[in-house]
Image 1 (tube, rainbow, N blue to C red):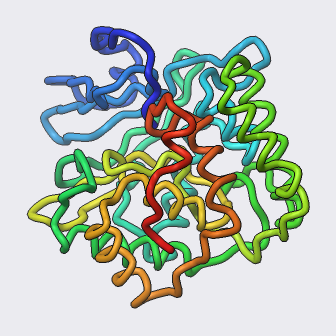
Image 2: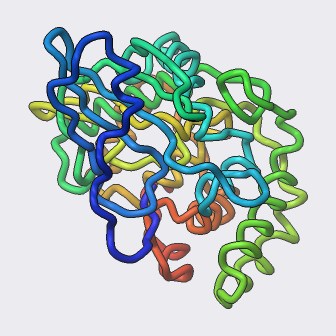
Length: 313
């Protein structure tokens, strides 16, 4: 997730909570800055004499209504019930991803509640974040296509939070999405004329849209930076806090705005070798509007975002 918000603050000092998570003295603690402001988690690479591990914790306490601050997690919570403060949920979520043959995910080594926040200590995974999927090696794009196909092949009969959180029937998803679009727009973009125009254009017919046939694990903030790669191959997914149970077309809607034509073709061929491609036509525009309102890529021009070229016809 990329949320535009002014100058990026300096990396915080290592919190005292880190000392409670490691049995040995800490030799170094490097703050892993994702490179954009507005990110939801504090992430540290911690080294002791016996291990090197990654520590994650949600950095905020939520807004006045108790929900996570910011358009992204406020909207995701309303649509699917996930809460980034519940970082202990990473343990069952990673088990689900491993069970469906998804991308390699770090093992959860330890969990603790310190200072009123949940903290998890995770295995450090090899590779570096993917800076962009445009121009990425074919091997990497094919790995991504096959990986997402295996994840999507495992289906669920409900939408919502994947790790023991609230869920609801598939039949309720169209109305839930419409309500989320209206609520996020009213709260975070009340003066955006283009957003109001797209809502008026899409929602009257969308409420009568046929419910999805199944839900899968999808990443609401899908972006290259959530994955690690090494030597042109996908090595891990490490930013997993925004996985939800929802229609797989949401992943494809995001990918259309992340891939160039060549990359989309490579990805689609690898995906189709494992699982049939979805049809985006009926849902493309409502799902694009959702991703815009959630500020997933930091785009600020609604019309330009909605008219992005089609990559998966």
